[in-house]
Image (tube, rainbow, N blue to C red; front, side, top):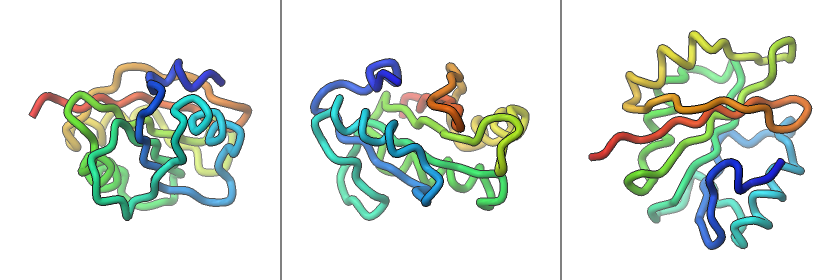
Length: 128
């Protein structure tokens, strides 16, 4: 996966939320190599250029997670929602994402496969 396809620029600061042992470490490494920065966790107290949110169907309330994910994102930044592919444990339906995103103030712009087990859905923030 080319991290540039996710819209991340060199020198970007990307926040990672929802990490667990099942995440795609190759994708994480690719993002870090492309941006030149390590991914920062949810405890960061700075504005970030983008967020990757690993999310599984049993992780809780998706709308709440998306609202939380937008808290540190710069205006015009994106949240990439990473969910297990269809047929994988923890799959999240497109309908669930389509319902949660607008309530959280986000617009779905694109969905793409990233690696063998994950799908990434780009959610754009609205102008504030």
